[in-house]
Amino acid sequence: MRVKQHLFDRLDRLEPELRDMLLPALERTAAGRDDLLFITPTTNPYPGIKWLAGNTSSAGEKILSMAEEILALATQLGESTEGLLAARVVHYFKKACDLADPHRGAPAGVARQFLKELGAGG
Image (cartoon, rainbow, N blue to C red; front, side, top):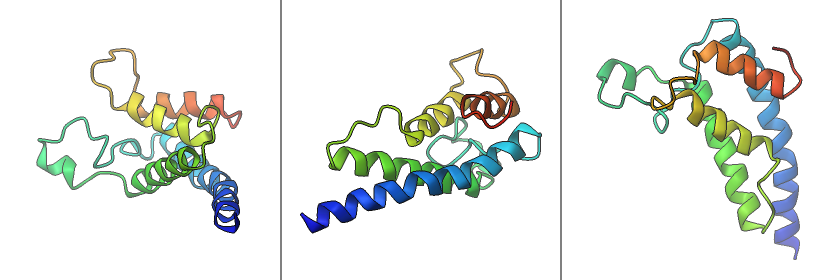
C-alpha cells in the first residue's frame, strides 16, 4: 500500500513539473525561437536525414520523456490518462511531426495552439 501511495504522490508531482518545463519551451517555439521543439529521436519525421538526427530538441526530448513517464505511471496505477497534460503533450508532439497531415501547421503555430488550449497565451 505504501509503494502505491508513493507512486500516486510521484504522479501528482510530475504533472506540475511537466507544465513548468513545457510552458517556457512552447513560448520560445511560438515566438519562432525553437523550430525543433517537437522533433525528438522518437518523433523525428525525417529519420533518414543525418543532420536532423543530430539536431533534435533536447528540451523536447525531456518534455516528451516526462509525459510518457506520466502516462505509463498513470496506466500502472489504473488511472485514466484522459485529461492529463501528458496526454496532450504526446498528442501535440505527434501532430507537429505528422507529415501525412497537410494542416498540421508550422511549429510556431502548433505551439501557439497548444498554449491557447492551456490558457497560457496564443
